[in-house]
Length: 175
Image 1 (cartoon, rainbow, N blue to C red):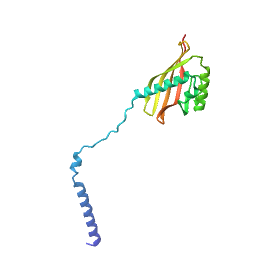
Image 2: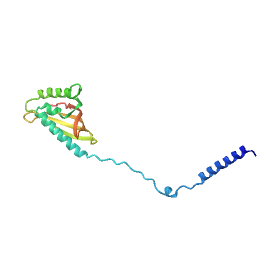
Image 3: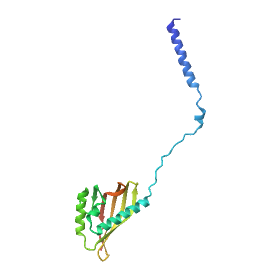
Image 4: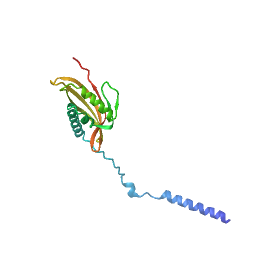
């Protein structure tokens, strides 16, 4: 036999030996016996009742500013990039435009007219909350003159909630 054939046969023998050893090796029994450990991610529960109370407190302060006809205090609840969709008006974008709209609305309010806001529901997470609520406006004698409903999206910025979007519309007045 020539040297090339002996070399080929030797290589074939080595390859078969490696293949046979690899196929016959026993799995590590310790690994085979241990169950797989699955770690479930933990999701922090959000205390929506606490958030609802926090949003209602903001709405109470908002109503106080509105009732005092303080446009600067009302606009402080909005972010610079806020968008407001008010009743019977085009969409208003940005704090300066929203402030102008607030000032115009406050100038039209009758003497002694007051408003209250009631947070009915909140949902979301600790950073972004959508609020659904109602509004009741009364005249100086305490008679209800208007009711409405709203949605507001609050975003936590610098540790406090600020309104980034809102929409409001009045209910039909039935007399």
